[in-house]
Length: 269
Image (tube, helix red, strand yellow):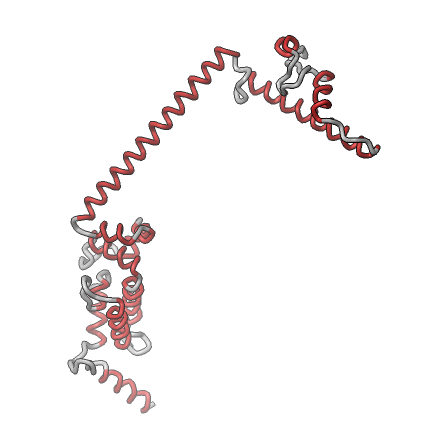
């Protein structure tokens, strides 16, 4: 028991001084209070300059703080909470893409203001999409001068793209309706496979075509079973069309097929 107490006292005494600089290090309570006060400002949390700090400096500052406020070494009731902030600051600032997104968040939010949205809240509101943008674009958007200019051109480009899409859609609809009216006035919709009589005609022709294929397959299987040569498809289809002429809904042969001797498949009937 006495050994454990002496170790904790030795750690606490070592935590109040910085061996590298020889100056007094802030106590764990002071560091925790500072971290929680500036928890949205990751640079202040780690005590770094946002303009010049490097990845090595970020890592060094993280380990320096962890030695003081880590819950395994600090008995402060809010040590776990403060350590979570420090860990988030380290993981964000050591990732170049996340750091660029954080810089944009910091440029749009008063990070030192009490009650301001945290970086994670900002991400959940749409800021996380910035992580998928090219780093140069994120840096431009985070810049106080280039940011608004870049956003203006982005919105302008989106507006132009929307207008082009709308124009193409209107052109398609106009052409579509023109052909639809021409078809209705020309043949009464007979050639239009999606509407009215054209749809019914298309369904009958599909059914007729499938019956013709089925009969050909049966004929081919019979010839194979007898050891005879396979029937010629063109001859079979021609003979089948003669034996099964196309009829309309009333069971009559259409005038065009009877007059010209051809059906919709192009075979002589």
